[in-house]
Amino acid sequence: MNRAPIALAFSAALIVMTGTSAALAQNSVARACAADVKAQCSGVESGEGRIKACIKSHFKDLSAPCQAVLLKAAAIGTACAAGAKQDCAGIKPGKGRIEACMQSHLADVSEPCKDAMSQAAAGRS
Image (tube, rainbow, N blue to C red; front, side, top):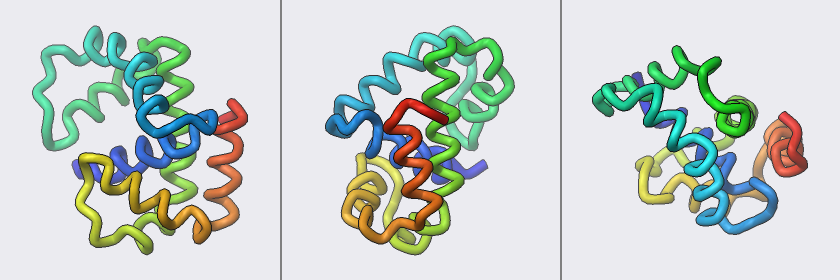
């Protein structure tokens, strides 16, 4: 499994969450999900989509805040995937590169992407 779509979804979510800086938003995601992922997937080796698969298979066991963050990220990733693929096609995931690319193209995003980001920023999914 490719980790780029998950990275894109999280990056998109990090850009818009509550209007704070990306670093603060990333801390929110980490706080919401780190303990859950550790509890549910501690024995899973990273790579080849194994962590993603573990999270997906244990979604119902995750805390409500973590579930909410993941659902928002998935909604944004779905709504914004085409634009990100077009605008950031040559960007290698990791180290905030996709996030930076998406930030530089926020004016170019589609209406469905804008709607998803607005709903996430407003606390709706």
